Length: 207
Image (cartoon, rainbow, N blue to C red):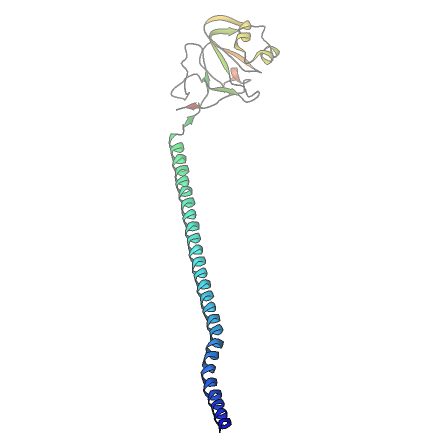
């Protein structure tokens, strides 16, 4: 009888204790899986957060680049406007030059200025097309008869050294470049026969 009772208790204990322990074991087995899922969810949230941060950083960087481009383009436009405006101002203030036609030379009593057929004035902007020197002139002086090519070649444009061959002559005007010289006593046209050997032209006057 005692043996039968023990066997019955063993069966009850085995049956009911097993049913009780199984849920506990399942819970213990399920806990690592749940923990792993929590970890996966946490990592997913971290990745999503990182992606959002990267996206925000990229957007901010693009905004900065666009702002820099705008700032760079604006000075370029303003500079182009300044250049255009300065070019217009320069063209507006550009000095117009006029040349004598015909070209006159004359004595000290002949006024200087732009020579025309109606306004006969002695040109004071003469330039030689042979030696490319500007013509020097001396009022109330004439050149000495001993002047030669070498004298002007060696002394032009030193006016102090040129005076060694100048002679006082009231009403005359002495002209010279590095290769030619002339004394004018009255108004004369350079295209005339008496001054045909002079290769002098008007270098233009400011108006």
